[in-house]
Every structure is written in structure tokens, then in C-alpha cells.
Amino acid sequence: MPHISYSELKDWAFCAFYHKLTRVDKIDGFKGNAYTAFGTAMHSVCEKKLLQEEVSDDFFIQEFEGCLEALDDDVEVDDRLVTDMREQGKQIIPEIQDALDDYFDEYEVLAVEMPLMEPIEGEEGYKFKGFIDAIVSTPDGKVHIFDWKTCSWGWDARKRSDALVAYQLTLYKYFFAQKMNIDSKDVETHFALLKRTAKKNRVEFFRVTSGPKKTQNALKLMRTALYNIKKKRYIKNRLSCTGGYGCKFYKTKHCP
Image (cartoon, rainbow, N blue to C red; front, top):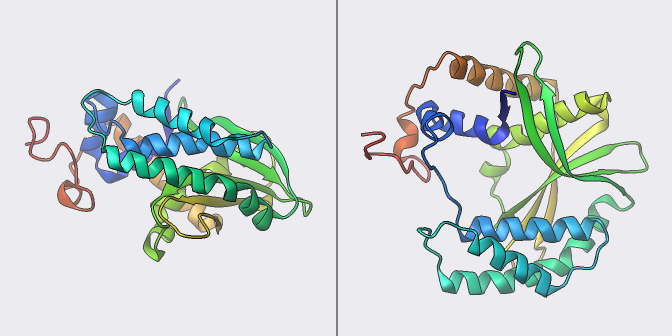
């Protein structure tokens, strides 16, 4: 079944030609690194914590080592960075439960890693695909969905207000409400930051609002992407060639 995910939408928004190279031509884009390995391992830790399961430092180390071993052979890994990450992960673990209790006070876990594969209105044959990290309910009748994000010391104001970043939760909220047949007004969304280099408050939750206007903007972007993908329009976004972290295909045989 044809589908689009938030990560694919993000690739298209970065550059439609980059989307073609990685998603259509299947040329390797980003392969992962020590940071993604750390993030995957911490996700496993957080899932167990949320389910009130015992989590030891050894569990985290085993998960982290497994994720590192799964990286492609040509991915360079800095041994000193990995050593630091082992200790940083151990420091984050004890703060996860306290952060959950402080932020939500009383809550019930409804699901972890809930899959979404929902039809997109007006886009016959296409579905939205995603995985919601965690869903909890609170006594006030609200349902909360949140996504774990590993980072260094936190997110600055620019990252927190970035519309494209927020669209992940905006789309999750919209399609979750559609899947569960509930009013989206009863759903709130949050990011949970796991901060590697922070000296305190290593786990931080913050709410992301997704009202009707933001939801419509997110859906409009997704439909624009799908329209161009189906029409096979792959226009290069020259601003992405060197902007930010740049593009790995810039001035290569794939994108001279």
C-alpha cells in the first residue's frame, strides 16, 4: 500500500531531489551513527521505564552496543564519544521516572510504539504511516502522545518553534484521533528531551500545541508533497545543498 511517513515528508521538504535519490532510486542517504545508536538504545530504556519494568545500566549498555554493531562497516565511530555516551546514558536513566511523575503527576499508560497506517482524505490509495512512542491518559480525560528525542544539552528557541519539527506531532495527533475516532481536542502532544550533556534536568517534557491552523498547514504540506511525488516532480532545493548540515549528495555523481 502506498504511504508517506513524517520522515519521508521531512526528506521531501528538505529537497525533492534528495527525496528521489533516497526514496525512489534507493541510493543510501543517512546511514546512522553513534548518535542514532544512542537514541535507539535510550528509546528502549524509556519504553521499559514507562511500562514500570526494571531497567539496569547493563541493559542500556547491551542495547547501545547492539545498535553500534548494527551500523554499516563504513560508518566511522569515535571511541571517546562512545565512552562518554555510555556514562551519559547511565546518568539519564534515573531521571526518566521522576520526570514522568513530575510532568503528568497521575497517568495511565495506554500504549507504547503504537503503529499508524491511516488513509489520507482526498488521497485515494495513500496512507499515513507512523509510530507513536508513547500514549498516556490523565484523570482530566485528556490523552497525551509524546515522542522521545535524544539531544546534547537541549533545544534552543528556534528548534522548539520550528514548524516542520512540530508537524511530526501535529500529524500524529490528527491521524491518531482519526484511528481512535476521538475528538482531537482531547489529545495533547509533547516532546520528551533526553539531554546527554546536561548537568541537571536531563529529561525535559514540553508541550507542542497543534490547533486547527497548524494542522491544516501540516496536511497541506503533506498533500503538496504527495502531488509532486505522484507527478514525479523532483526539483532541487539549492538552499539545502550547503545550508544547515548540508547534503551528502552535493557535488557528487548523483547531484553534480
